[in-house]
Image 1: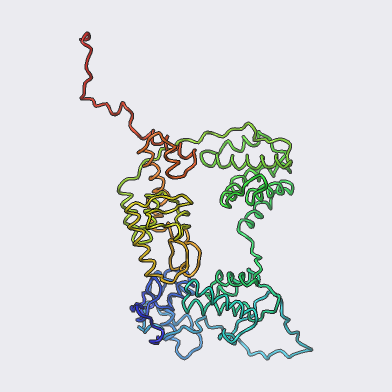
Image 2: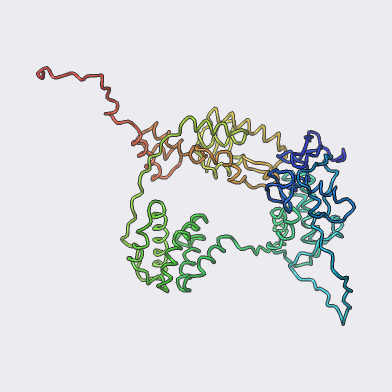
Amino acid sequence: MSAARLRTGTPIGSCPACLAWGVTYGSASSCRACYDFTRTYPAGECPGCLRFIALKKGHCRACWLQAAISAHGRRRISPGDFAPGAYWQLTLAGTSRLGHTGWAAPAPLEPTAPPGRTGFEQLELFTARRPQPFDQRHWVASRITNDALEQTRAIAEELAGIRGWNTRIIAETHRALAIMLAGHHRGDLIDSSTLSPALHSRDLSVTRTAEILSLAGLLNDDRTTSFTTLTQARLQGLPPAMAQDVEHWLHTRLHGSPRSHPRDEHTVRMNLNRVHPLLREWASRYQHLRQVTRTDITTAMHPLTGHLHRQTFTAVRSLFAHAKKTGRIFADPTHAITSSQRPLHLLTPLNPEDIQQAITAASTPAARLVLALAAVHAARPRAIRELHLDDIDLPNRCLSITGRTRPLDDLTHTLLTTWLRHRAHRWPVTANPHLIINQQTTMSTKAVSENWLTGPYRTLTATLERLRMDRHLEEALTHPGDPKHLAAVFAMNDTTAIRYAALAQALLPTPAEHHHPQIHEPKDPNTP
């Protein structure tokens, strides 16, 4: 690699995948070629080097490079070039290329003459909303230009300045725009469904390209959401009248109506999953929801227990209440049917060993801050992900979580200032407004993923959600029998506050347990 491409502080070392010495790349400290190789191919056990590593057609990149040496002078690599247990030639990073590494095509038995041309040949006409092929003639993306490309490139340059994109991101974005707009005509729109097939194979960002095309008014969002696909699949086997009523119920739950608020997509998805087995059973006998009776509902709910019983009954009651309100059925069969009362599950405080494991797992400044926000301020993972820099007020030592201002304790204040210094040093020009960011979100404005946030604690007993609940329980034990205090401190609803207060009352010792057996009460002088 030339010295012009080396930046100050770039780590130098040995690639763990191909053992090449040179500039490392990515969190795994591998060379750039192995970094792309690992992202492209799945992992498995290589029969040549017996390592669990990314494999392309059954072999790792180091074995492919050694097979290329064995196949020197031939255009293709054959299976015989892979010798198990052989040696591997050490190289410098960036000096070897796999090139054409597909299996050698079998030679034809007899040469065939090219077919003669008869008549005329129909040329391919340009089809609107279809990405043009980006072949070897288009490798220099800067030479392709048109009005749409000029507009999108200007938007990309503006975003690059605002979000601090590096030169590699800028070059890849320009190339992606050239791929999608190489043959663009005025008035044409680019379908969202065509971005992934054209850009994913070239390891270019689909999300970033779609955002720029949307800002330029050149994107036609023709994608089908996963919830729509799930709904169509679940309603396909139901009678038309029943499927229509259920679809109207789901649409109202998801988008709301003049007299009802929209629900979260996760909640509506769970409602559909719970009611679908019952709908399939009723569809074998009935054609409409108005034919379902109270006996059918009680019979279907009888074998269900616990959370499954309560969630299913809630979904069924919502479905028939909506059908009754909209005039699709004459009477609500769930009327006067009551669900079993939710039992009080005894939640015990976490052991010190479990908390210490969570502290040990928090090995980065971001992970320590996330741990403090969950364990001290009882913040949910989603609330932590959505925290912005504007929610932090260091001079006044307070922060705002889900719109509620809370004072900063000394521990959280120390961890917060440490993270902010690390954030400013690691990503000095990022424009992401979120408090917690990582390498994937530093050049965008989106929040980190929940998997990344909860990853260090997912296999532990003290997960972020469990730490949040333990903080609620600790406050309830400190102020026993006071749900109003819990509701005021953590902004929880009345039902949750009452449940934690009841848990605290169940865990606290009774007056009889405080009685010491060695302390004798004074006896009545008239008794022996």
